Image 1: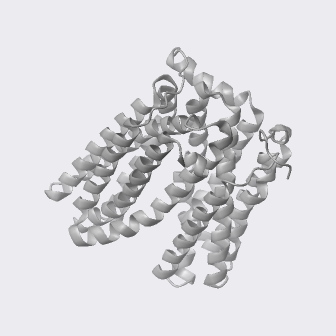
Image 2: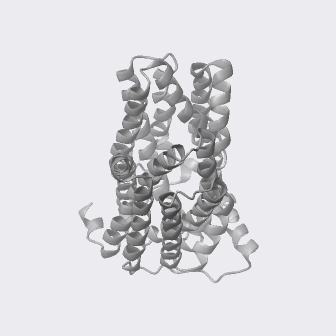
Image 3: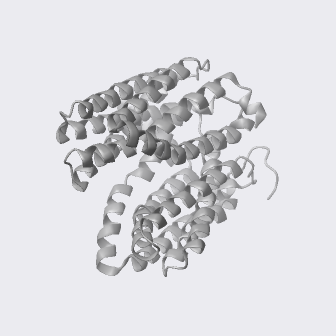
Length: 401
């Protein structure tokens, strides 16, 4: 761990991203407070949130192509500065009281689109910041930092927004992007870029890299099916917590359990190095849907909290290991495009499955629908065991497990 932190570039990336992720927590709180206290409704609040996800989905593949063409630091700095300007514009909009739902929705759509360029560039950059043997440590550190920021950000934002108002929350987010851009400018690494071809040829190149690796295409299809259930399950956890486990307090505790488990799992993921990573991490991945089973009845709240914490810890272990495997097996010149296809496979169904989860729960009951989601997610998690190519992927220098 210390060897990773000795790298100049790693320290600057972690500082910038840590503050940026912390700033993201301010947006979720500030947006809800701003819209609902300025005459907006819950439906109005859903529009900018949905626009953000739509922007990411629509431009995710485009962002991956450009992240493999240009130096990742150029894309990251540009994206940070644009997002800082957008956050500052939203802060000004609510500070003056002259806000418009349509403009707000478009602004957040642009925010999501710009983020779609940033993410593959950042993933491509961090792949080359350290030696291959140190990548898993870095992946785990960044995942734990992101999870910790996701826990602390809304807490800090709640206090700041309550005292100073929602515009200050957006302003803090804008400042975090500026600081992130300044930190990225201090990063010295310059990963090699391939000579760009035509845009569609580059896009096909990323897709072909996935098809040529059956284990990777199987993982992406698995993630697609998994998130059909997971998108609905994340909504149903909150529904059951409100209806059967004690209301708002239970919702807060379940979110805390998920966050704490994810944080511990990310740290644990830095140490788990099985020889056959895609197969040996299946138990960690399966623990996520199994950890949701106590909610189906539901069982007492302490049992639910333990199940969620353990389940999401397992998910993060799998995530750290999986990312390291992709970094090992996919060449750097293709990595951003492959990562963008991978993310699209995970994100694409979440908005629809989240919406369907609430609708189906109203008709059939949240517990029954969650049971179906758990079954679907479990089957998806077991899929790598039945893909021969998954058994052939080995960790370089791993110990036998």
